[in-house]
Image (cartoon, rainbow, N blue to C red):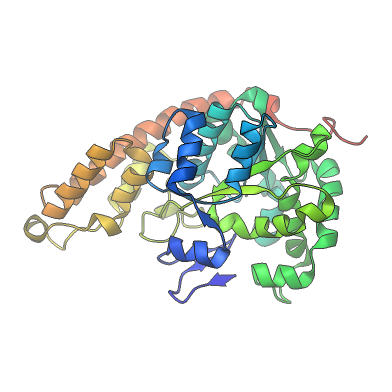
Length: 381
């Protein structure tokens, strides 16, 4: 567990408080994505993605080595994942949207791990049947975003266990209980499955090399709260014959209640891909804002968009035009625009996005199997 003096908590299973992302870079020992690295990315993608321009994807490990290999014609693969504890919300979609941009621009394979075992082990209220059902529901959201069917491999840990277990064993043999306790804050109350789990999450970083029969670099786009798993993977990678996985870290979409990240465990402050238009309107209507206590006061003194969850949704996902975003910020500060108008604008955009996504999500039910990686593919039968 990483508990910082500012009283915010960042672990793979809990994020709370007002997160200082620069301090996380220092504490986690990552590197900031600087202008030079952004320029190298844009050279190959031909486009400055909004999440790069605004520093939403802001931290990395060894991204330079990924680009080195790409430029030398060696290629690379991507890996990301989802712990299926419930339905997908917009905070999950955000890094996946950027991952799709990378797949589209670089034309690389993506391995998408659904950790149904993790959520079973860490959440006592969920059965294996629950986590498996949520995994397949989450897979619909992955497919609905438009990932390349021929280059995207989705799998559940429990269903791809034959292949994964052999790699995870090699990882587990190199990771001591002392390391697990130090990185994740485990104590005597943790079940032994939870202590083992990081071996499964690390294993996917090496899975493409095993399937291809040759070492290939892997980059993992993810929210920065997942970095601890991959610090462990990087520590042992070379000792079991693989490259260290590279990482691209993003900031976390705040909840509608304010500074905490959007969480499936707090449904009233999160917008899910299965929400109705009515649900979305109600949640945004109740969102935390930077508005004043009265209309007159806000007209006089302005609002504070920097602490407003509604403004953050425009910033992270729902306003790509920087000039329009700056105009909204200025009008809020001056009192020219009120919270109700911003909430109405955001409701319209989110409702439209989710409605289109839901249509694609239903169509995805017919093609799920075409995306799934099965043990018969590349297994040591």
